Image (cartoon, rainbow, N blue to C red; front, side):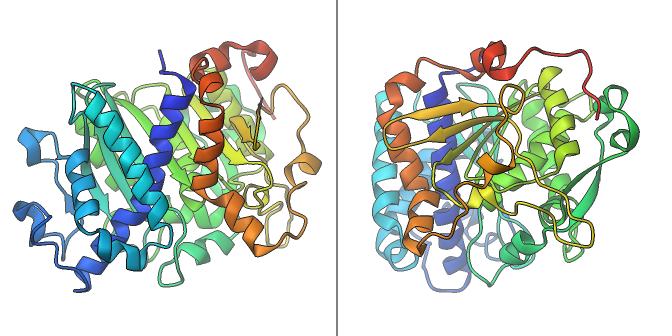
Length: 391
């Protein structure tokens, strides 16, 4: 049974924002711009400069408590102001998180396990969190930053890539879909086939990071904002369709402001996973945000329209709409209706996680009376489940 929609989603939003700030702190520390000696656990202070952050052995094997992570961020507030344009928003978010933690007697229930950002120039940035209360392990991807990383090259590599169809889906699909689905090449390569990666691909690293916790009975959650949302969609799809016996189902993905990830065949395969009960996906975006409308079609000699997947929570100033491809005709026209040229301030405002949070807070009471399990059981929203979906 899932928690209510607001509580589940807002925690994923906080993680999706803090991954940006924490990565900036580590980057500045590695570059010598910050002295973290007074705020960072001494056991990992020397190692983090030359290696990815792996703190799974701290806290009696629980990892680095989220309260400790917040203290690191707060202790470096003056430095963070210089490198974090949305510092005031981050500070308010931290206050809200601390209020939740302090109100709960079972404090220190959320822990950071690993954080991979040392190779951010060539590989995507992600962290792994463990929630001991709800028995969840969460993978959070950072979204795009500046041109010192491969993020924007990844965003713009909108050609199609054939992704092997997950094994659990092959009997329910026909034709070429039995072999592959077509997805955004840049997003796919960033996780699964990064030619510039030194060492393991991100997907293999993530499997190694989460497996010990999953074997202890933890469920898998995935989240991210913007580019991070696209990456979370592909990772959740891969995990949910895997025949590895240790991967629990369903895999839950809650993303924010995701661009398009795959074509109609990808949507067909993704929907089948939903119908099989292997994946639950809430794709949250603001009305008037342009990023979820791009790229509308693939680059290259053969153009194909990209399609969205999952249950869409579309946020407005004073309301929201829930929809799913099974139950309505929100096709190309609806998908691109926000892509008319808009001023830069509009793009930044509606793509911001702060606007997402403000709008979710305005609908908190309604969202707290919903949960993902009930949404997927709602035939009016999700459509009538079918025994097979081919196409």
